[in-house]
Amino acid sequence: MHSKVLILDFGSQYTQLIARVVRGHHVYCEIHPYSMSMDEIKHFSPRAIILSGSPFSISNPLAPYPDTGIWTLGIPILGICYGMQLVSSHWGGMVQRAEKREYGCAELTISGDDVLFGGLDNCEQVWMSHGDALSVLPECFTILAKTANSPHAAFKHKTLPIYALQFHPEVVHSPGGKAMLANFLFAVAGLNADWTAGSFVTESIQKIKDKVGEKRVILGLSGGVDSSVAAMLLYKAIGKQLIPIFVDTGLMRYAEARRVKELFAPYPDLNIRFVDAGDTFFAKLKGVSDPEQKRKIIGAAFIDVFEEVAAEFSDAEFLAQGTLYPDVIESVSFAGPSATIKSHHNVGGLPEIMKLRLIEPLRELFKDEVREVGKCLGLPENLVQRHPFPGPGLAVRIIGAVDKDKVNLLQLADEIFISELYDSSLYNSTWQAFAVLLPVHSVGVMGDERTYDQVCALRAVNSVDGMTADWTELPHWFLKKVSNRISNEVKGISRVVFDISSKPPATIEWE
Image 1: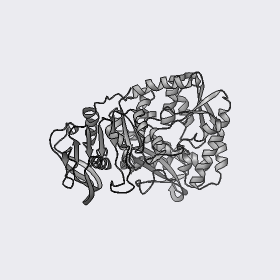
Image 2: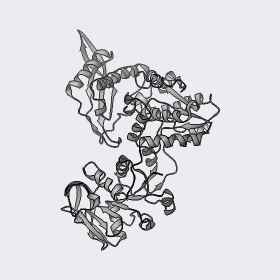
Image 3: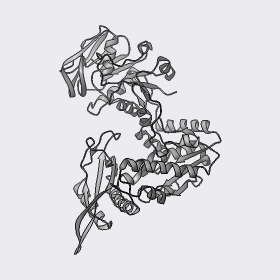
């Protein structure tokens, strides 16, 4: 049984970061709404609890509170920001509106030698984000650290393993924050670093075998990281019982079907069913320019095609999806469970239509953990590090109406961009990179002839989870080389531009 940490979510924008840091220390954790009942908490059997921040103030009449039973469990508790207010409020402290709000970096001065700050300097940079402050410290607590504006920036219970931090150790702007959280997990809570890719693979294979038995499983295979890792994990568990279906929408990356065949060629009994449905999708998309309408048409067409092919395997009882843990988290409000799980994948809606039971082998993992599992399963580096790709494919990277000729242009331009990133050892230095075809024609000159061809935009961003992103500063010599190649080799594109917009205010994709 793994050591488990429960993270109670009070609505902070940083809650997922807490989980990512805990998982990064190879400790299993889950995020649940603050309203989780005591029976549910006891069933989960956490070895420690972390209380997240919140947009609320403890003085707000609508302020969220956890079940008071958590204070009697006798396990270590760490309150962060709003979680700190909860700790102090429960034990008789007083929180008031701060005379001076504190947002941004602050210098933390650590007093004493508590294990929470073991291995850290006496002064550490931390990230503050609060408008309230603790004005009266509960008598049963002792101060561990302060900042110029927060005399109670960190404190702990004198006899119980309960800690509270005014700042956010989980963000990158608190450089020593990961070490603090590690100290809480190991020195305070005595947990084991036993949540690894290897242990996940071993346990998941057995779980899949137990759940599936001798039944067959259908999987929508796209060639991306998530579906490929899910396919390999299922294959290791049930072999020929897995039925991967690759639907080529005609909107995929350059030579995607061929590359998927090559990737899984070492596994000849992994019999992938390839379906060329490009003509169907182009016919349905003819003349459609609105991006949301394009998405709906593609999603509906995919379900129609997939269901038709899957019907050939009437003995299948399971449908596998590459749902990840962020998908699960986003489907649940911090105020309580939502009615349904969001569909984040091309096969969304299929379980209900096809009356299949759902199996989601990656639903406990963050994206970086999926990549580690892929490596553990023996998938090649260029696959597990592959950049994200939108479900609707190149249709949302072609601004305006979509047709086969535009897709061909974009595939070639995108392939040049991506191949040059690989050849220049720059691919892994950016989180996502791609080309976009604009609905703009621009005058140009090739040889002695005047041209009037399309414009291609290059996009490269760095991000952690796609929620925010900054444009990647690719070298000028590299952009020059890519621009020259696209203009010279892709007949129909005469001008290349580079997108330097961050998210926000822009989005990562153009549509």
